[in-house]
Length: 148
Image (tube, rainbow, N blue to C red; front, top):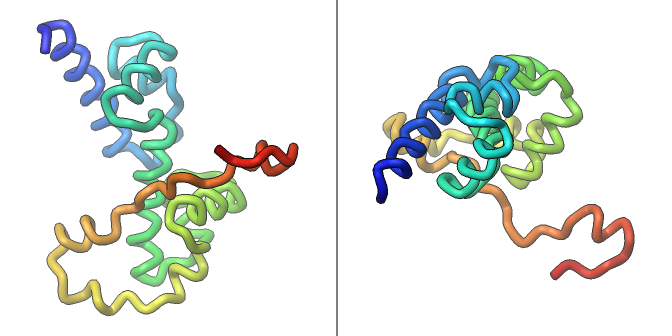
């Protein structure tokens, strides 16, 4: 890596750390870009190149990950939604379902007793949300075009 690439990566890590630390606060791409000392468009491109997802997708994954922990502990769906910084219960539920594969209510109702015996670091690893790939686009479904 060139010195410039290493410097850019350090700036991107600063923004990623901001997301990891302050996921429950209102964060937008310009705010994240400012932490990385980049313009919003350049930051968004560089973040996706470095981490494989957009800054907003990364933020939502962190929020959903924290919401999963709250739901496992018995927090209501509404309280979990607000605690992680989401303001719309409908958008939160849609994004949760997209990432986790089941609704927040279904996830909360499921037995999570098998995780009690694991150390916290293993629980985090086992429950880390993974985006479901190869999903059909709603836009394609709406116009009737088959998914690629």
